[in-house]
Image 1 (cartoon, one colour):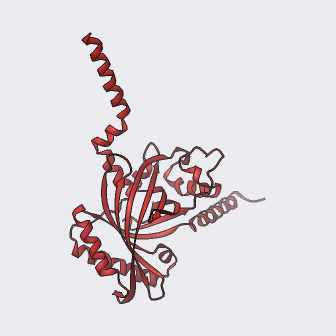
Image 2 (cartoon, rainbow, N blue to C red):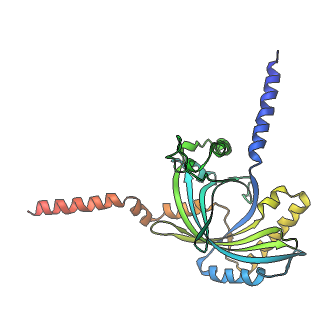
Image 3 (tube, one colour):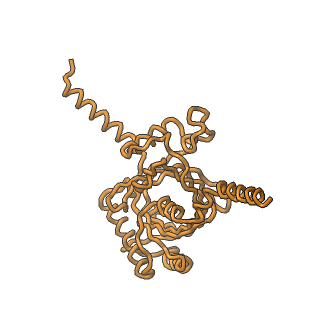
Length: 296
């Protein structure tokens, strides 16, 4: 007969095994996010191309190559009514990625806090099902895109934050133009990316902002040994410092895109009017009817 203490040990061993199994899906994301004043966007992108988009460049003693690309993204962010995800600086989105107006990929991403400064985060990616679910989740705005295994993994990752999947709903819709430079080493392996995102609200009144992401290749960083990790971090630090020296108005803002746009929307009178436009129209009609009635 197994004693109570052995049951406890078995429970924790099983829990650790399950936790590790789910965690293997995640990748460590090491990035700096810099807020860009609108007047600096054009000059910043030109500077990035001139400095880093080259066949050969040397950064911290390492020979690299930079290649540019411009893509378009459509992102739908999810949260619950209490907006727990935004309070934890968690980003959960369904993304469509376009190149030259051709849909390249769809993806569901979850980014959760990892380090206190949010420079290193956990990122989990889920491939949407090719055909929408026809089960109990068929009408859910997010879960209809996921298979059973992905739903279980997503629920597990959100469980520490007491967020239930069934409570998630569409919160914000974004569109963004992504101008990016890919840095790779002499073996052709990806090292880091310099990304300039021009983000806009998909709906009226179309608020906009711009930000820059300096990100180490997440796959390489996740699986790297400590020496290689340090090399990658040093490169990213150099990129951040050199760019901030040139553009002194760039400030670090590690919040997810969701948080930034939600703040713009929540503080916008025009957005509030859009949310209640049906009531506004109804009120105007009612006023006109009453005016005509009492005028008689």
